[in-house]
Image 1 (cartoon, one colour):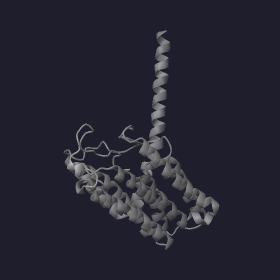
Image 2 (cartoon, helix red, strand yellow):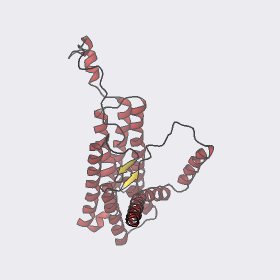
Image 3 (tube, one colour):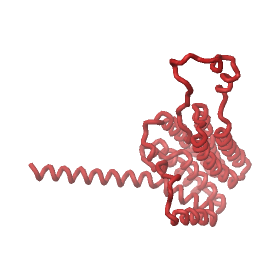
Image 4 (cartoon, one colour):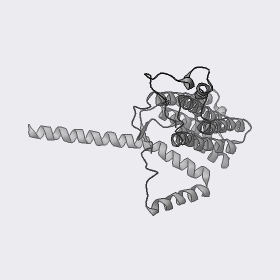
Length: 276
């Protein structure tokens, strides 16, 4: 989720309310409205997710996958716009969560179900439901941890990244016209695994600690240009590969961290034993 869960308040409780703060005055009614600009991006994210569902129902899987990636971009912008314009609100945070549930929970699950999982009957829709439930639980846990969790890491795979893996798989599979029982089983396994990663305790880098306002070396700009060129060569394969690597980076990093801690603990025990 992009926006903060805090609601800016004006004034303090020990001040006497003036005429502008009385119930029924025009100024008071204005405070009950919502901020338009960030919520426009959130609405665009919601629309893109809804369009992905409609496109998949019509068999337009490439358009459905592209719509989910567009929803990711809009979801990343709404929170940043809110912070830049100082228009964060509790309403915006809740609206953003609901839009994320549709765009990154329901939309990818239904798109992959229509594309391949429906061939497996109950097993297919159960796989899609596991992914959807994982998204809902992931968003609920994230909302309860706002302000307390380490901003440098996500606990569990973020729902936009999970949706990118599923949408990228559908996009690539549709381009190569992949069909058959083996494809359906593979898609179900990937969908379930991604859903479970969202509710796991695996840590992922959030990249929120990157300083985008500071100066960077010239080679960094060149690297950004190369990324755009690489994506333009074959968008579905490059996007799927990139987000798949990110999805695998969490378990790999967690296992490596556990091995390092065990090695440090073993070395500490050996050192303590040698000093006795």
